[in-house]
Amino acid sequence: MGSESIILKTSSEIESLRKSNLVVAEILQKLKAEVAPGITTMDLEKRCEEELKKVSGARPAFKGYRGFPACLCTSVNEEVVHGMPSDKKTLNSGDILSVDFGVELDGFYGDSAFTIKVGDITAETEKLVAVTEESLNKAIDAARVGNRLHDISHAVQGYVEAEGFSVVRAFVGHGIGRELHEAPQVPNFGKPGTGVRLKEGMVLAIEPMISVGTWDIKVLKDGWTAVTSDGKMSAHFEHSVAITKDGPYVLSRL
Ligand code: MG
Ligand code: MG
Image 1 (tube, protein in one colour):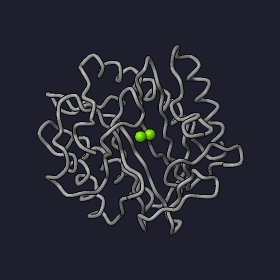
Image 2: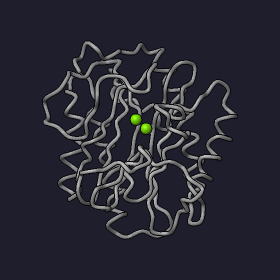
Image 3: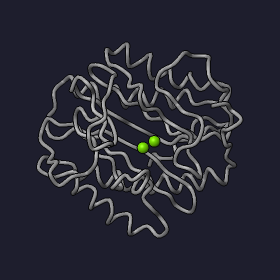
Image 4: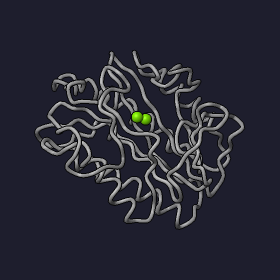
């Protein structure tokens, strides 16, 4: 997509996006505290629904999106993204869980995700989660006026591959605003110094999806759940970030 299709936001629109992203961040923080061996991913979905009801005017962004059935995406272990909450999916010690959540509030979208360990996990999985989160921090730091879009992408890829992990190709980040998914696409791989020039007022949902083994994925028969094709672990972190003249403004951080 060309830069002409990227919608730049005013500072008042960015403050509206901050409000919707804060709803996301606050609910995600509550869900994080619930994660423990023995709970199901549907328990988290129900808690999310309860919390969302308390926020006047907020609507779940994913429920009904192309027929997706839930407020949350809950993806366990080899599930990369788009896992569906289920009362049959019980979390066990040694698992990792990725939770992705979005809302629409007063016409503006928020979108963020984290991965968290359940009980005790292996050292390799621990490293995967840490590297994925740090790759997002590095990407956010590249989200600056004058840089190019793929400087963000390369910040993820360069770091992750040096740490021995792989970058999922099938899914990418996106612009966010009055639509959940706007231009541009924000890949987590690419050549530095390429892509559109980053400008004040761009708002990007940056979301590295990182795997221990292959970056290849397949989608399960449910039509949604994406899993690594080698069955190895995958992690996912996401923040919605405004590019401002003062640097990156992480809208979905508490
Ligand atoms: Mg998301
Ligand atoms: Mg997103």
